[in-house]
Image 1: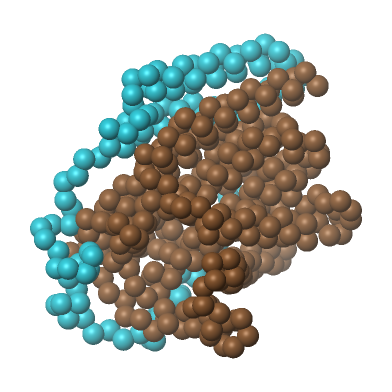
Image 2: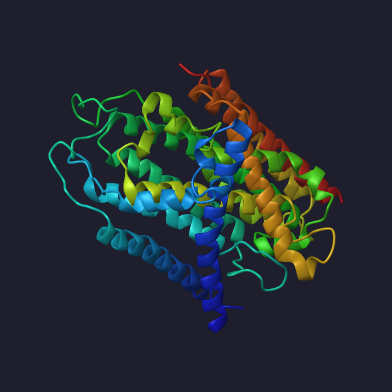
Length: 317
Length: 123
């Protein structure tokens, strides 16, 4: 009982801390890569206090619910967007043995299903805002979820086939270094599809600020808007953790797997999160039709090919 | 082996914790923030100009075909997971793998058909 409580507290702690670290890293990495001066000012050294200043600002803002909005849906949406990512963290193993809050049998399935729920928050926001741009944004969110969920599920199924289990703990246990080339296509498909599901640039058509203001989030302000931002960073953490666990061997490193397992996991998550930020500053936004084409003409066939490759090798070996 | 539902009690507990975090943050925020609604403030922001017409406007949803495609594929994909855990176990092997190729062929044919019909290109 005590063990469960401690683990839940650790999960909640990681949920509170890691997304903020990603947010802080995004400020700094973007500032350096793009020569931005804004995030380098607050607090003196490298603008370390920018995130705190943002938090204080959000907390002080008035919480305006537009008169025409669908009040309850509008107010509930940020919670629906944020909480699922907390639930996914529950099944992600950080180390060997019992270093997972809940070793769920159908872990992969649970993680993907719950991650999909987070997107509904954005769709709710788009629908409830009574704002034409938000509605368009919400529609784009829905379209993006539908197109990219499929290659993501196929890529994850490929790993489940390779390991012969759906438990995330079991998958890392089965993982060997030669899975890297074997599952490489699946890994790329999974990561790209995940980015699209999180609506991260270059897949940020739903919130394209230069054409539909800020998509589903236009009418939000104050803490509710901050919760949406937090959900985005929590999503990055979850996506990177899932990619690390499924495709990069989770806690398995070059040495001391048992003792330093959690460190390898965190390191892989950190490197992947850096890549997420790097992609944001490097690529222009994709057009809506390019988005759909990438999913259906490239990612789905590639992930099907990965499934075939996994199946053949697995039976042949 | 745990009872099946016991494992999910932890999930429900964490769900409540999450709801508590969000609810608590919003409740605490209520004490910090000002609350002075005016008629002007409560109009829909849209793009900064006073909104014209209703928010729930008619628009052509071009994505509905993707929704159909997704539903078809996703229902199939769900069956992959239980299959993935057993297909290489003793007693299954090549026949089971062959069945998967039939399954993949169905999906690929469906996708190719959709592509040929021009569904996947933007109108």
